[in-house]
Image (cartoon, chains in turn cyan, green):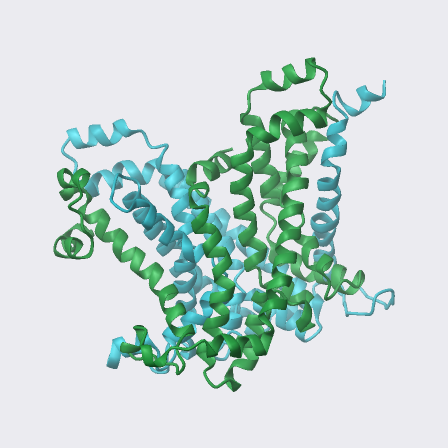
Amino acid sequence: MKTRVLGRQPVGLLLSAPYAVFVAAVFAYPLGLAVWISFHKYIFTAPGVSVPRPFVGLDNYTAVLTDPAVRRSFLNILIFLLINVPLTVGLSLLLATALNAAIPFRTFFRVSFYVPYVTASVAVVGVWLFLFGSGGLVNQVLGGAAPDPSWLINGIWAMPSIAFYVTWKQLGFFILLYLAALQNVPKELYESAAVDGASRWRSFRSVTVPGVRPATTLVTLLAIITGANLFTEPYLLTNGGGPSGKSASPVLLMYQRGIEQGHPDIASAIGVLLVVAVLLIAGVQRLLERRQA
Amino acid sequence: MTRTISAPVADDVLPTGADGTVKRRGRSKWRVFALTVGALAFLFPFYYMIVGSLQARSDSSLLGALPMPGNLSLGNYREINAAIHLGRSLLNSVIFTAGVVLGTLVFGVLAGYALARLKFRGRGTLFAAVLLLQVVPFQLLVIPLYVQIVRGYGLADSYVGMILPFAINSVAVFVFRQFFLQLPVELFEAARIDGASELRVLRSVALPLVRPALLTATLLTFIGPWNEFLWPFLVTKQAGKQPLAVSLANYISTVAAAATNPYGAILAGACVLAGPAVLLFIAFQRYFVSSDLGSGVKG
């Protein structure tokens, strides 16, 4: 009788219980808490101490939306995405296509593309600071063409530099996704394209690109989410979103406002707005793609 | 696009004369060119990281990109070790990573198996949660988790506090479910008819069959906590509890300026942090392939 109520194999409940508890405690509850905090005046206290936390309506959101630093950080992410997403999609598809054939040293190439992806950003940031510093190797090569002030401390170049860095760092993962997708493009399509006398560029455009469109949607979405999560790079590479907030990201501001300055309510409001913005961008992107297809 | 500029360079850089490639040389030329340019751009910073970490005096000139015998030393490693205690930080990284990997594997396999092969009340709801959670971005959870774990439970500067938000991974649950779904149903039925309990079926039938997939999952899970910065950075304020990524980041943002060769010391720390992940990945690179990941992604 009992087994019927709980299903045919109630041991399944036991096996999945840790996951269910985890989901409730570490995802569902904090998710609700984030939204709740963003509508209240909230300050940090020692464990167990209770203080009044009055409902303040949209006050936190008003404060966030009128804060020029926060607005700038959202603009920065937009700049970031406009550079990062097209570059990521283009380069990873191109390299995955090149990799998807019988070529010499295939394993070597494959491994070298994944190495930045498996390495900690904190470690690689060290080399980029060295490479792109004022007297760094890149500026030595460029000579007079180097931007002044140098890349990471230049108001115009700081955010694009971060976008290039993240493109480079994450590309291996997206190449991996495209390689998986390329296995599903029917070989016959390439053969018939070749019979019809299509050039390689032409068959890339007319067979490969439409053939991997579902993967492109996934890659775009993941690149947008990665971009919205940006924290380590502005924190370390441009020394806290410098110069003067020109490369600050919303998550960096959440850290600064929420934890450094002790306003978790403001930080939660930034978080909610950020997620809404990401969902909007992802939705618009889906619409555009559907219209194209 | 690339074709027009590829012709003269590819042959200099790579010996494409190997037998199989001679016939298809024209076809593969642009590929090899694009891949070589890519590989150089991807590997050079790592080469430069190693060279820079061994320079006694930081040399950012063009010649400095080559290891100069007169300018080589291990001084940078001593410097960074004195500043952030590499051994202790590495140990913290290992504990944090091991906790996350263990939790992800054990609980992920259990939940993935239950979702794939067992019928019980609430299975549909739980699977919907798995799918839904993949779109919840971590940045929204950072503040409430900090409020909850650090301020509420008082778990600052503890391994438990560091591991907790990553102890189970919804992507892993989803991927394990896919692994178990790909096994033939008859296997499970045969084992059950023989009177094996569900746990025994999982341990003796299902797990041995998905072992290569588990290795891939372990590798992919490893790089997450090993490289993670934001969360352990928020949880640990004591230097003695910080994983290497956090202590190196603190060194970069605050201490480095005072060192005699700041870049050298940073790069030495970077090599120590990057080393284990890169070596592990190269050693097991054949498990890190698109088909395994693809089987999880395709759904």
